[in-house]
Length: 251
Image (cartoon, rainbow, N blue to C red):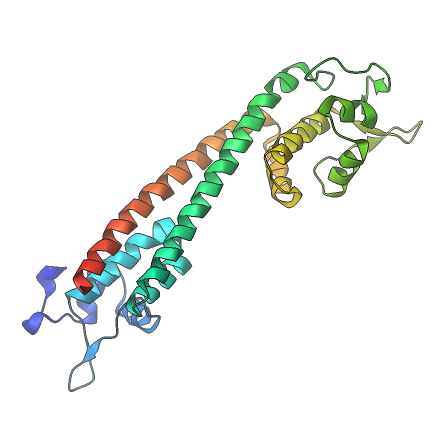
């Protein structure tokens, strides 16, 4: 980029755009959004940029993969307005979100490990000996399942209302019957609730398990999830380095 400096150390919009595969309109839009500092103008009204603008553009494009377009825009706008502490706060929020996502991933992975014995042995298995009463070859009754999980039947009914479990009704008695998939979902919900997750946070995860057709296919999704988090973490490091270079250029 520095090789494109014009006389007096000036850059045209096209000089900034070419190095990043952007259009000159995109460069102008970035300036108008506050991502770039305001450009000087020639006597004929044309924008002229400097190495400072080049560093700003590099910083913004490096921040986007780790923080997203919206947050990266806010970070650059804060820096250009002289509110560096606000920019750091926004960066801290992104790192906090990344940490929360990692914790969620760990909680789900841990819950899946705890569910493996149940998935292997079927709905009749449990963490310990449970009552033989109120069980049926066609499923597990609410009292039996609640006892095995160490919760109240009312909790299972609340989870049903939230869509975490979907028991059917016994045609003879009208009682709720939980099949193997329901038991799996209830145990997964129980593990995540113990980890402090809200019902509205758990529901999408349960939906993923159902869409995957069980726990085993979800392992691949967890690996992909872990890979995306690692990629995002590295992108944040790259963005931080580029932002530091821009801050040094600003002086």
